[in-house]
Length: 265
Ligand code: ADE
Image (cartoon, rainbow, N blue to C red; front, side, top):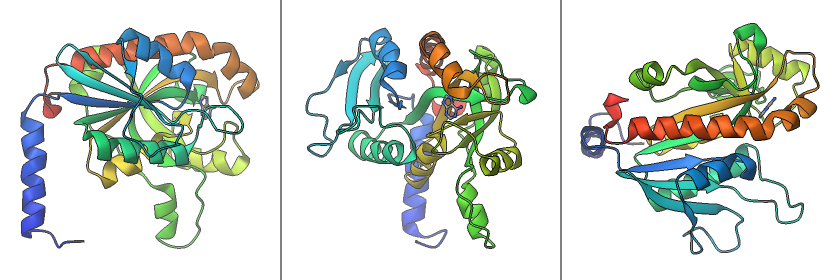
C-alpha cells in the first residue's frame, strides 16, 4: 500500500471529494433473496440485463433502469445451481458486490434485506433499520489483533439527514452465515451491541470499504431473535409482508437520495 501523502493518495482523495461534490447519479442495490428483490425491481420498473457483464455461467442477476435522475442497478446473487435456492450469506454477497462495483462504478451502495431483530434493543416485526455500523459474529479468532480482524467492525456511511427525514430506526447490525443463533454467536452479537442480525451486511461493508464506495444498510425485521417463536417459522410467516415494507423504505431512501450529493445525506 502506498504511504499516506504520496501522489496516488492525493489523486484518490481528489477523486473522492469530486464525487462528493456532484449529485449522486448511480446507485447499486445489493439484495440477497429473490423475494426481497422483486418488489424493488417492480417498483422502479427495472429490467433484467441479459448480458450483465458478469463472468459467464455465474447465477448473479442484474436489473437495471432509470428513476428520476438516478441510474439504478439492483444485483441479486441468484439461485444455487444445484439446489435452486437463493445464494444467501457472506460469500455470494461479497463476490457479487465486488463484481458489480468493478463493472458499474456506483456512487453509493444500498444493501437492503431482511434481518432478525432483538426486542431487548427495541426491535419489532416490520421495523426498518438503518445500520450505524456493521460487524461479524461468527468469525472467532482468539489471538490478539486477529480477534479484531474477525469481528471486522466497519462504520457505515453517515446519513444524518436521511435518518431524520425518513424517521428510520438506527442500530448496529451483526452478520453471520446462519439464520439461527448459537450460544457463541449470541455472545458475539451482545459484544457487538447489535440490534439487528443478518447474513450479508458485514461482507458487503468489507468490499465497499476495500473499493472505497460509500455504503448504507437498510434492514427490515422479519423475526424476533430473543422472542418466543422459532426463528424459521416467524421468518417464513412474515417474509412477504415485511418485504413489502422493505420496498417502501427503499423507495423513500431512493427518493431522498435523488438530486443530492453524498454529504447531503
Ligand atoms: N434474516 C432474517 N432474519 C434473520 C435472522 N434471524 N438471522 C439472520 N438473518 C436473518
